[in-house]
Length: 114
Image (cartoon, rainbow, N blue to C red):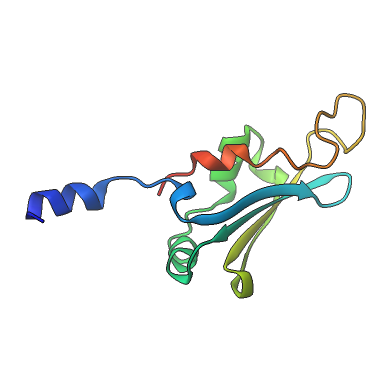
């Protein structure tokens, strides 16, 4: 591959869908939501952890919420995963809640580029 082609390829942003095996969401009690990103391999898990690609600021921007609503970001080595816990906008099962189980809240994570 020519040098210019290598540079262009190296500078191209990749999407998280290329490196994640699973991206999901679920309730963490009635007032919190947990987002899970499980990586396909150790290399990408380490890259995301070392480069701090997942931050409270980034998640807050994706979900259009305050950074203070992001409660925890935990890298869990045994499963090569990052777990993000955030406050739910509406408690699970309350009037106006459109996702009682929190299982459909992961889609904004698909927009993560690195």
